[in-house]
Length: 109
Image (cartoon, rainbow, N blue to C red; front, side, top):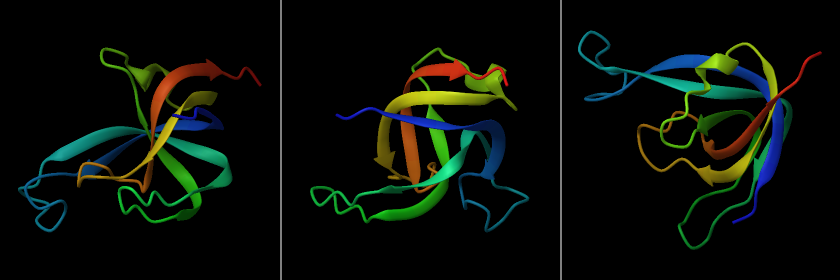
């Protein structure tokens, strides 16, 4: 798999989860996720083998850290994140594009 480097600011966002993913906010669970808000838009090609469609003009990518790694310490910071991009697959994926994180480097502007 190809690795990419994306530059942006790390945010922590909460989304509605099961059972109804926001259709009934009083009873739906909440899912906190780390989102990278990009400095520049990206486009991710379609994946014909999995029927994923092309994602155009994306400015937000969900970061998926390795098991046991907490990216919350980067909240509010500008970073470069290297990893593998993939398309949203389940209702737990709240952005069309996600990144399996291999490395994070903070920018000290």
